[in-house]
Image (cartoon, rainbow, N blue to C red; front, side, top):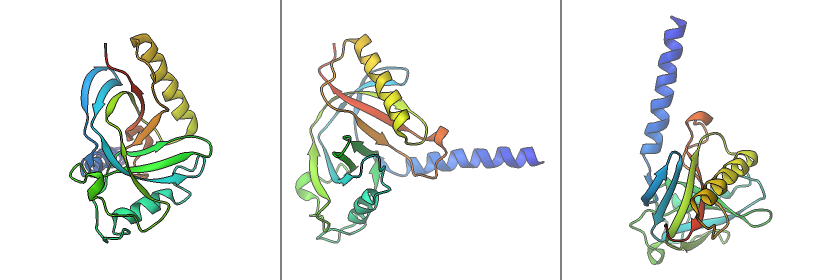
Length: 192
């Protein structure tokens, strides 16, 4: 009986996590080719709201809350904006940033001005990215390992690295690590 309860609880947890992720719109992209967990994708220009993040902070420094306040009405128009995935993290050292992707219907000129001076609206330029999908909780070792795997795959595929890495996180913090969808992305040139 205890085993049955454990199995049912595990199934409900998996279903709940997938349902939570499915409840959010995601940044649009077109897969140009794939190989296992690796993909080459074309992204349109994406409007994001971005804030600085303490080195290695992962949002514990208040960066996530600043962005969340913005989408829940902490902007000059007091407009509520739907949460989307992924939450992007980029940079390193003293130059880290966290960004929320704005829904596709909101272009940069339509996004209300942030009430918090640490939040800014900007556009990520359209382009082609090599991407590796991986699971697990966010940690610097996992990010470094995933980035190295992506770079190795890109070299084997003859793809050039044209930007610093961008990390995408798709799940809320209560999602078990083995169910989380994370990605590391590197801008690349045209596909061969």
